[in-house]
Length: 502
Image (cartoon, rainbow, N blue to C red; front, top):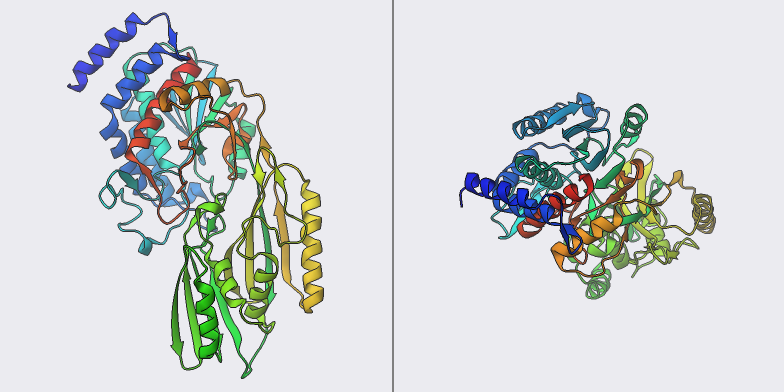
């Protein structure tokens, strides 16, 4: 059916359903408009995402988003799309607001336009090009799930509502923040100076509804640089990881004065490692091992396989001198191991009945002028105070330093608060829409390990784009969203906007 004919049909149908009638908790007009969106805008929505993905909107150290030329180009494309669809567009620098309608009462959708780094060599095609062919049924590329895909979903949900001239009592505003992955302070400053929608949904997490988020934390320390030259076996280098919120896929170690007996032990230990692969290379008596695991969002460590911890575990077959890299490996095995939840890290491990356990994962090892820096990513639930955790971390580090006669440098631990939303008025509506479109009955709010901008907006909860029970691929080196899910998100966002803005 041609688009114009379908539009005429839907306009007539919508008129028949005024005033609003409901069935199964979702208004007929919301269902009709979602149906129209699905039938009309799948290709346009995909093209929108394709264009937004071409801009490598990672954060540049020392360069504000407002001064970043690629960020400005991305915003120009976003402005073009918004205006072509008939929306108003306001650029506040770090924050873009795209609006539909006029009212003091507003409904907000919170997204972000920045992305995490990527290793282009690990993708079948460039991660900045929407890949629809490598794996049929999937839209692959950086930002497809986190968070440019939801921007395109939101634009065409709004467009469908506009096409059908749905009479709403509230204005709809799409927020696109340009530093969600790196710096929340510009958003905090914006919020101090501007009024916000009274009700908000964040499109940057999971379904059915996210009402709690673990607190983000980082433990950082440097193992001091030492001169070590011996004819004994020792580790001269150990590196791994890419960025702080990604479970590391790669790690490398160099062992000096190695022998075949050591390699035999290491290979025997490797047989017990599921999801890992190792490459071994000799250069004289120097043995280099490259480890390959599986990257994942660090808030979902169970979705990945940590190359750093598994490579360190291989090396536990030997006792290593406490030179720089040897001390690092010994520490990893003493206090982290291959577990996910900090069970070996002194007394810090704990869990909350709703939010689940705290995760504790090393994500980046890098060489600095002072030695080897280790960053450990923490996602912590309610149940302990920040000060209690800091004290427990410090106690464990102090004890290890004393026992090993090593003074760690630049030790820091940043522990942020978890977020719990208890009274957002839209929760039941979101659950009803989710249940109607998925067939999942008695859906309940959930908690996640990640942190979203929901924390900063009034009455905000997260609604998608990832389905429960599926692997979240944002931040990984294989980010994608299925075409089916991409369209389902469009339908649910269209229906939800009508339900919340009517």
